[in-house]
Image (cartoon, rainbow, N blue to C red; front, top):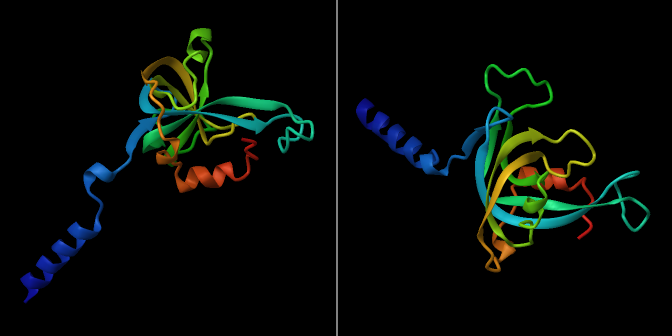
Length: 168
């Protein structure tokens, strides 16, 4: 009887626990380049002075954003001392920080891309996603028109975006 109970528990927990392939990829803040794939969105948010409405005089902060194929979890390396970064879970929406003029040409709505860069957490009103990536390299994998509706953000990203006053 006891072994039957343990067999039941084993079957129950194997059914209820998510498969290992369903777990989010784990990456790290600013320790080294990460590689991510996703679709580009070009979005418009209000900037200074009030970060509420471009129509009412706030600056236009149009920029590139990456919606990932699969969510990621971002952790700190154990030897990291950056007080601004805390672990962030279930990220699918990332703001792109682009410093190379040639890379700006690749930021087109719907492009499917592979990016390499370092991750950092949002810290100012100019940051419109929970996570940003400082782009070191970006490759276009496809310029075919991608149905962006298939790429959605996580609930956690959506909660953050609720306070960003998207203007698109």
